[in-house]
Image 1 (tube, rainbow, N blue to C red):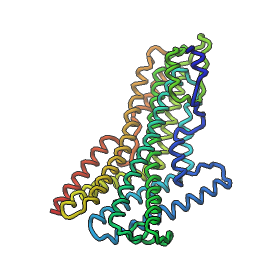
Image 2: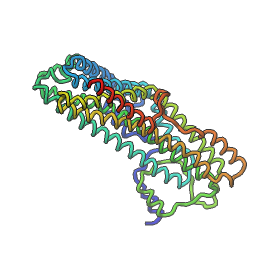
Image 3: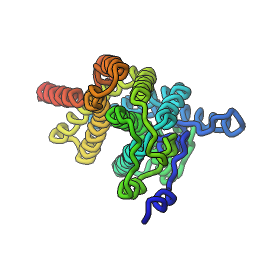
Image 4: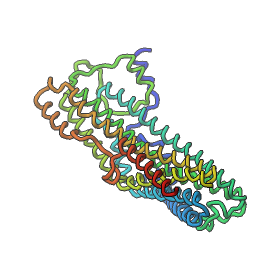
Length: 428
């Protein structure tokens, strides 16, 4: 296959203004969290009514229902179960309302991700972008699907336990507890169980898919940092280099992202290293803007998330211990799955912050690798300015108190283990 034929056969061209997180946003749109319509027309306001119904009937009444069930618990195992679920629902509701109220900021983040594709780049930059962003989008999509499947399986088992001990009585189902039962007046047990499962699962899916959106932002921010570091290393180039047929063929395996690129028809075209480096500095400023907006939206929200994760791991661990003192095995299995879910969620947030920390730390090394010593005085002065900007790595924090990193993940698990050990000793 010739070079021209390879270039003509471009598939999956990704529009320059389309969001990298379109898949997760589409899922959130189905779940009543993200309004897909930007213009305030009939469809926009109809969807706003759907959001209000979802937030009031599904989210808030579900929280009150779980609270009632927790207060009316007949044993410690059931209380810990309902209390853990209540803590999760409250935390997820806070994140959901934050996401809805900060819609303009979210749109700004989505737009900035596409900023880099509007500046001139070489073929090598374009091919590297295709590889990095395709991988980032795939990772974000897989994460969304994986957490959705895992959560659905968890609720299948959770409602299996409810069915096992409900004695076919609607009043013993979550939907049969006030105040939710006043909105769904049901007498048929199986209909009530089915509706309860669908509503509960939809609420859980909206929460984990919102977490998937947060992870998608962090993953794609890491991808932008990779592109930035690559551009910085290549910024000292003065000649356009045509890609080989092998490189073009390999690039055809990735999604082709629409962008502004330099034509490589004339080998005499010269690049301006200073212009390239200034574009890199501008790109870095845009990434700082993304992080600032992200912190504005989620900085305070992520703090109770870490606290709830710590509490859930402790409670789940204690609930698993209670089985030897008369607890039921099914409740213990639910606690095990719940504990694993809490650990995975905590790991995801800490891993997302850690990859940003690691990748942003590589920017200074990319500057040193740009052969700045062979360039003119203006380029070297710009390098000094850039180095002063990237001296400190980018950090995602929770409430400005805890950094989302591998160290934080380790510390929380250690504190959770200590908490379970203390409670066990108190019980003994």
